[in-house]
Image (cartoon, rainbow, N blue to C red; front, top):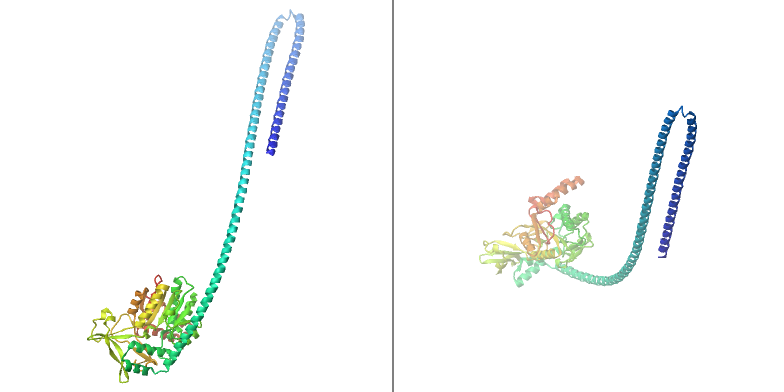
Length: 568
């Protein structure tokens, strides 16, 4: 405020000095004008006086001359007098004009002076007004700057307080997060310890179970299964075909590697790598279309030597598909072979111990055909089960005593006498478990086997030994006993338990749609010396008179999973 008063005082003194200087200048200019006017009047008076004196002298001379020539020149005198009078009149008029002009000039000068003064006054007033406006604007600006400064200080203070609060909140949050992280770490460590202990316990239990299974298998391997069956039939009566087939196959698979030239049969993966590769491509395509989930389980039922899985997973790995591998296998012999190919695989006696924490991608190739079946035959009195009895010491089919009409499909109840149908409660149970898991966990399953689209009358039971068909009763526990798969039944069971049906396709057509011919050409270019061999392998898998039509491919999946290719 003191500075403002001093500034205002200085401005007032400056204005007073300017006004004083202006007054002094105006007074000086007025004096100069008065002096100029006085000088002009004196000059005019001197001129008039000089003129008057000259005229007087002229009159005197004229008078003298006139007196001299008065008589002689009277007329001239009169003329001269007239001229003088005219001249005097002209001079008077000139003088009057000069005076008028002087007065006009004085008036113009006065008016100019008045205008100048008015302009100076207006200018002074404008300058004063401008100064007042500038001072007002300066005061307003100063007030605005002061207001802005105070607002900035208030804002800075508020921001500082806000920052301090935020830092305090962040520090508190960090403390709470650190405490939570510490608790979570402790809980995770405790959980990990518990899981490790549980895993160790599970491994011990699994090892104990495996040891029991192997011991039982070894015990069964040392028992003559034919004698066992004969003794059982003699003691209790005929046994079911499902029991005979189930125990025979359990003994058979537990004691040997049944595949290849030295075994009893050969499967599609052993015929050509193309089979497993295209299955791997099928699974990789599904996996990518479902978002390439990191957590996923690959499951093969009855993997044999693991050949199919080796080819399939090698192909799928090109798409960064790296699942946890699970094998459902009961044979100790085959488990050992599988573990050589997949050291990190997980073995399961059945589907009940498969993990339930992620989707499953399941493949079963020639698995369902080896599951035990029951045969039902229509007689004049209704449907009865075909049982296994004895004719002397030879096994033979005999009719059961209980009527089985209740388990016969409704459309077959009134079939012709002698009609025979096959059903498998074991296959139904496996498919129910697969469908339930796909519904709950998500995923897909591919079932490849030989069989029929619809239930038909007749027996498909057969036994293979050394790649030849033999009597199913000739070598119990020493031959591979199988039956055609009822794909109509499996499809109905899958849908009834919540799975979606992708489709059912002949193996040959499915492989064509998957691109087996394109793959064949690529392999032939890479191995021109084996082109014919590769073509024969392809034909065996695809052509109708070989495996192409007899073998079927069934695809099922969980709800909201995409359908796989190959079922158009």
